[in-house]
Image (cartoon, rainbow, N blue to C red; front, side):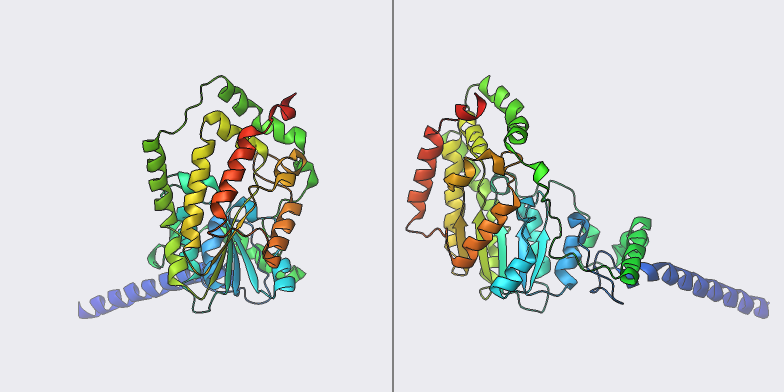
Length: 359
């Protein structure tokens, strides 16, 4: 009887050993190739390929090698890291995250600052929906198991057949000598995407609906409620700025086309929207390690619809222009000039002849 019990125990432990070997063996492909950079930089000559921001950004922010960061929405995707590296002496990674809300920015910044390596510069765009949508919302639901520090839920990554396939792709890339795509990650630069007719068509139906409705301007109480929402969103960002005084944050407000400003006017919230921008800029300027660049009033850009593909997204040439301004310290807004900048933008957008686009 005792011998039988001993044999059963041996069989049981043998089974556990085989199971453990099987589980570990199945995990090895992802642990080695790690295509979403959850655990380490690429090994064995595999390139860094950034092509899925929702799934890769958290890991890339934690484990890849960099000293400076491009963070932001699709408006930042047409920046090239080589511009910053070659002309400003940075060592840059692009962590663009299309449609990112302030909670997504909080996640990305938290991953960046878990690293022991100092971060010298972060350049980041700020858009209206990041200030006016509830702070907890997300454009795309992100996989939290890739963003937290829990090991037990990593099975969803390690034993995912799509991830395993991605890992084999990276291994083949190494064999074929494929290079990193950090410089051009997420870019959309095809000139066929842009133009006046494309931009107008994107905005036509929304404009038709708004013209049939009465403007619904925020009341003073509603404006204050929106300011409170703005503050909640800023609370997802400002603590990282204040807690990392040695990191310079370059915040810029992109140049939306005049069709964006027409929509705000038709909604009745042109002035209110600019007050939200003003409030946010004031908060950023209260931090000593922040520079704010304001491009919303770039008249030669925002009035020319050939530069756009919808009311907001612009050609890559505009990203290059923004970079040049940042490099040269141009288009900065200061506490003493902010009120005038906002007032002039309101007057320009309020009096503009929008019919010139629709005749």
